[in-house]
Image (cartoon, rainbow over all chains, first blue to last red; front, side, top):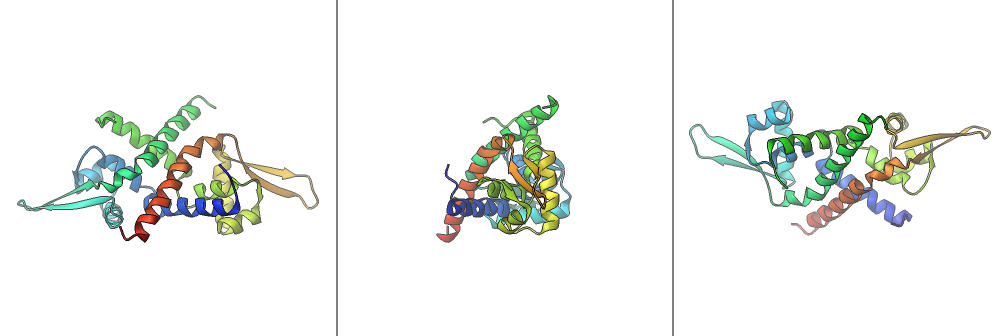
Length: 113
Length: 113
């Protein structure tokens, strides 16, 4: 890969864009948790270990960016479920790469390398 | 890919590990900037658009995790340069995936999709 000023600026912008959308402590963790299927709010809060206040904000942002959909079901009482959108599948490559890196990094630390 | 409880917990931990090391607003941007070669502190601060106080903290953390090395050169006045370590190259896959995703996401937004 070439590292010209232009290609670096482009790379920097693209990486910043990605971080703006899915960076931060929780968004990719939430997406990972939702990969196993749709979930209710409390279930998500418990499985991801996120406080309700922060979860609500994070889910809203994921929804705004077309990565999660919020479905209100006409039950009594009303139930709300969150699930990944089709578009969220475009993140598979990012998630896979981060998963592999995290795994190998932990091995390296454990091996004392 | 299978989504069992166990594989999901493992994926979640690995992604969290990666976010712990290179998550946040700046680390991957700094690594991208350093891909074009070693740089001094002020140069990095300018190119990445990071305040000196935050840059200093971020560089220290990258150094602790073996991703950046800090080289003091015996000049007058002393000069300090930062460069990527060989280990940082293990992040190429993560960076490449994030770069591609950010690029395509921006196209999608521009196209109004």
